[in-house]
Length: 365
Ligand SMILES: Nc1ncnc2c1ncn2[C@@H]1O[C@H](COP(=O)(O)OP(=O)(O)OP(=O)(O)O)[C@@H](O)[C@H]1O
Image (cartoon, rainbow, N blue to C red; front, side, top):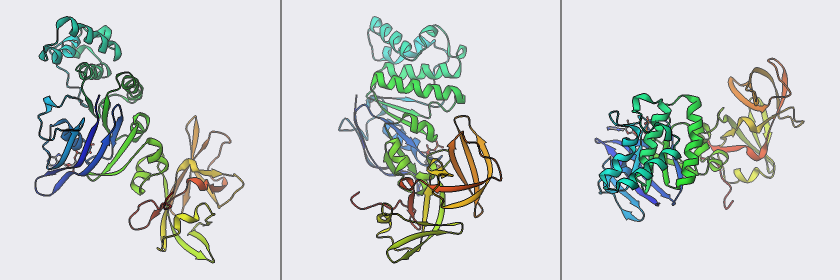
């Protein structure tokens, strides 16, 4: 069990490409942390610096308060699981799991116990005598996982470990991985570009963009309290709807004016704009925070298309040339060309600075 601390951790490739820049993070013992972001944002680079597989340009890595920045990987007591399972093809499942323990000169009977315990934990107990080629992708990934667990590392580092699995298995493995984490309680850093994977697994999500951390928070915090337009747009499917609006003030009242509607801010929302002195802002509204025919009309619009999803339906409208998506329960059904009344759940409307795209906050909230 371990804590991890990254202090201004940076990696420069060549003269000017920063793979990661000033990454600051404190991970508590037993936490399941997910690094999330689009391709090239620096997730793998950061993970590899933690593992010791990538030289650090600036900054520090601390495991259990010990500075390991210049320590070779094998001395750090971390285990890494990769997207490509990286199990040894010429060894049976048993031998794969036992290998690192043999190197550590663990006693044979103890090795046997550990191998069987972790194989059971990861659901591959019945395949111990098989070779990797005789296993499915999901089973092979479990072998890689079992091998990583067997050495009881201080830290688990996982780089997109589910990406090579088919969609259904990936979703099942998420649950299994969480269950395994619950039992082993090993501090884990898990890298993914899949926001729903991050949301469903993480204690806290570290959202990255262009080598930097944009937000650190629980799944609820990054979803409901997104730090900026990037996070609000990256997390959630369908994504947040963004509308550029004009800010009009009149005798203490504030209106957000869009070509299709004018939205008067209530007392709850007014404080967000107290110190905002620009003429325009970006409104963000999540698809499920928009209501249809609630009796509180902000504007009326024609339904463009409806996408039934079984558990809910996605209703799309066109607003000033942009598609706005609305998620509502499956019933009542809506159909194309139907005129609907639209309103917003005002508690859930987000405002972003038109220039910095950062979320407007209420001071001392
Ligand atoms: N060996 C390298 N030499 C030069 N630039 C590199 C090298 N490795 C990574 N980079 C650059 O560093 C940045 C971060 O890369 P990194 O692999 O950490 O991103 P990532 O978020 O893990 O992306 P992905 O999800 O595609 O794996 C990218 O701009 C990438 O092109």
